[in-house]
Length: 188
Image 1 (tube, rainbow, N blue to C red):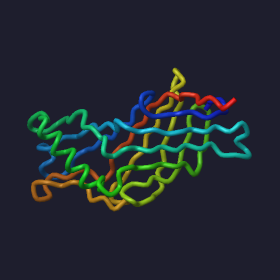
Image 2: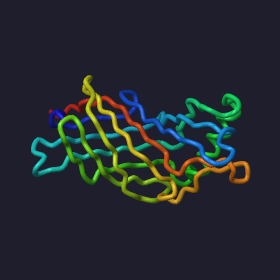
Image 3: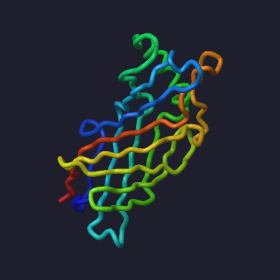
Image 4: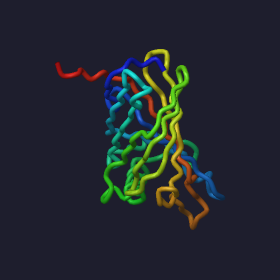
């Protein structure tokens, strides 16, 4: 990736962090595949002048209390405002937002290959820290786009189920991050 050495801010308002869920089970046609946005998140990227002596670092903090359901596809009927509020309450309960308001990610390794990179790091979610891998690419406009998958059960989260288990949320949820890199001026 041809990102110049320096320190960069990522997150709102120069970026979007989306979560995509999928349904499964015998009653899957009743439920919705959800598109959820993290409306409050921030992070930093530090690209060293000499990557051989210092690693590239990426850190992100997401306010789980500010997750917003943007849309639900599939299902028997469209999502109502009441459905969105019920989903928000369920997310807060499953993610234990009252005890663990923030999810954090800190890179432990970055491998760069031309305009692509693999970023591995520690994702802390509901008080549990596990490895997360993101595949990242630099876009023509200089922004970066990353994608990965969070298997909820690895963090001790029991995926949502309803209708006596006939409707289930797939254990793996997809994460997509698109962000500009806003250079942070060094103190002078």
